[in-house]
Length: 145
Image (spheres, rainbow, N blue to C red):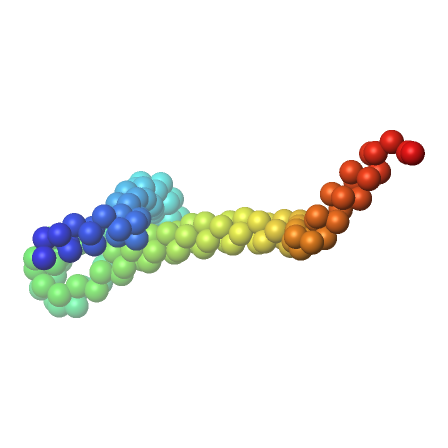
């Protein structure tokens, strides 16, 4: 069973998937930083606050905290700021993936067009035709009598 597992792991598809997951995780961190550190402060400034993730509506009269973390400790809250941050994260990530897939599809289409435009090589003639061609060429090179 251990040998089967080694063979499974050593296959290219599993390794490609592992690399993709690792790169995706790192890329997700970059997008999260982009949204949290660059985009959301601008959006928060436009809508009157500097910390967009702390926007919430208390669902209980006992909630009177100024921050989301403290409000959650006091009771139920409708944390729409956190949701909007995650939604913007998703939309940016989806847009970037869309652009990457579009680029790959464009490159693939270019390669297919080049393959279609390339002239096809004719198959070699049958052996008897090749032999007759060689005989003809030899006779043509022979001095005239």
